[in-house]
Length: 423
Image (tube, rainbow, N blue to C red):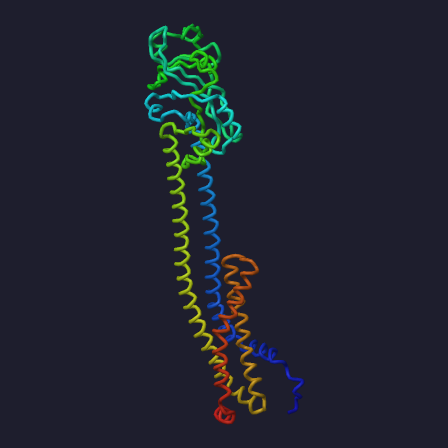
């Protein structure tokens, strides 16, 4: 041969020159590959965007749920404070049946019990207040009334507010609605109770309860009048919201400080509000689960849709790539026969024709990945690399087998027969 083997252009350079000369077939193959790869990358991009949006949506729902529960807890806390102290700590020897029947505790406990409970600072109790209550016969009037006295509340938790309790100052008295209505009392008037003259501080409004027949006074004065110096009938406590549904833990903490003492819930408000909170939390949880399940169903439907689109795109791309490779091999029968007649090795011929397919694969993969990036935004370098590798694998499966089959078919033909038929 006149030209030395060392001066031959490289296979890739020949493939590039050949691609520039026969650009239509190359572009057609590249577009077919781009369509198939673009479908895959676009599907991956959509699913990734869906996952990202789902995560953001679920986080927003979780944040809203947490904020809703916090607001609900604050509202419940305010409601509980308006309702007052919700737990009554009774002496160990007090019979609960008698307590509920009489409306007060006949047994007493020492004031040191209050100080011991405050010093222990149980986590389930936010605050305590000393109370003395007794039903007595008012000797000056012959009426049965309730004498009630509150001491100064003690805060056990610095973060919470306590229900407002305004102890009656010494030397003064508050009277219930039935009493001040029956005696025509007014604030500032004097009232004699059990031999002691006290000034009426306040005439309280009608309540429809035992409060209408109650006389409120200073704790020390009540203890002196009733002969119960240093004694309490009850300790009222405010339970922390965390134990509204687990009052046994409060009772255990109180019993650890005051052995035998009994903690009784006042009314049904605590259970009602705690059940309402539990129902609210459960409904929010179910809503979050339904949202997550709905998003998963949407993702599965989208995955099936894009899977079908990707299969159709890949099938179309495979058909176009195979047709283009077959057409290219058919058009170059004479060229391949001349190369063979001139002694060019079949491997070099196959490499030349295969490089053309590789160029189409690379170009189509780049375009297909760009479709995902341009259509759905920059997903990050890691995602682009994954898409690129996926695109190369898909493109190789689409174009290279068809190109190899076409090359093998071209090389199997005898050069003399091809040249005789074409010359």
